[in-house]
Figure 1: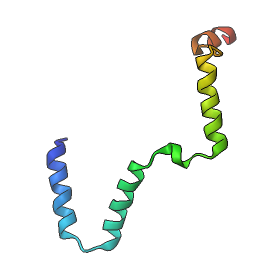
Figure 2 (figure 1 turned 180 degrees about the vertical axis):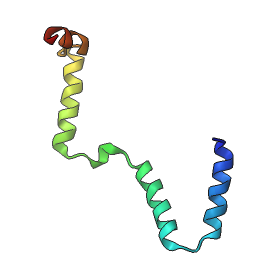
Figure 3 (figure 1 turned 120 degrees about the horizontal axis):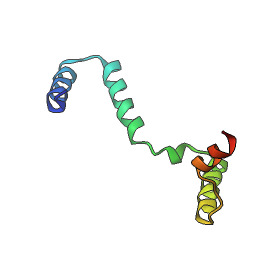
Amino acid sequence: MNIELEKKELIKLLSETNDESIIASIKSIFKRENKDFWDELTEAQKFEIEEGDRQIDRGEFVLYEDLMKKYR
């Protein structure tokens, strides 16, 4: 796939359309891509993730490989 050619084709299609729903859909795709997932999390979810980071920093974790050895 030639990305530059694809972009030019999309620009051409966009410039030729008058369909507001197509334009709105494209805009919503770009807005979704620019969102930071962190902003969508609840405070409880953020706390749990941050607590996991703190546990890793303290060395309180088990490697996946070691865990799998225990149960094989």
